[in-house]
Length: 191
Image 1 (cartoon, rainbow, N blue to C red):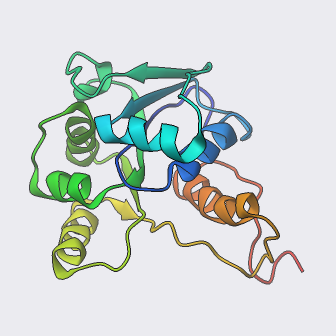
Image 2: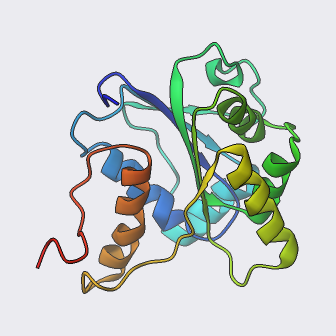
């Protein structure tokens, strides 16, 4: 799949882990053939957590375009739109549960529903631990429906030296799963 001209959605929900979303948005601007458009949606709680965890307010920079979570007139609220990938990062278990149940009560859950019904790429990056049985069953339902669950679980075999390095082990995995060419450590290929 070609990356040039792609339109993607990044949804940021109220789970802790805003650093993953921030680093993901930064990295999307550096990939080979970056997306033409990145639609960004925050849940109400996510904005507050972003500000608390990063110490700054979010400001969209091109090609990012922010949409409010109650805007059902956003183009990707319909399957007729040209958005091919949605990444929910971090994904709260509440949002994952609503998506798994088919509840489309805001733009994030509606866009995720569209991705699933159109058989497009939906990635959820839960930042929760431990999981209870309801979480596990919701993630099973999402996987069976075609979503990819990529827990925000850093890897250590690349020997990260900083928190940013550790975070990037997850972000690089997300980029690969979203079918972008990412310069990432590959086990036993980079030694």
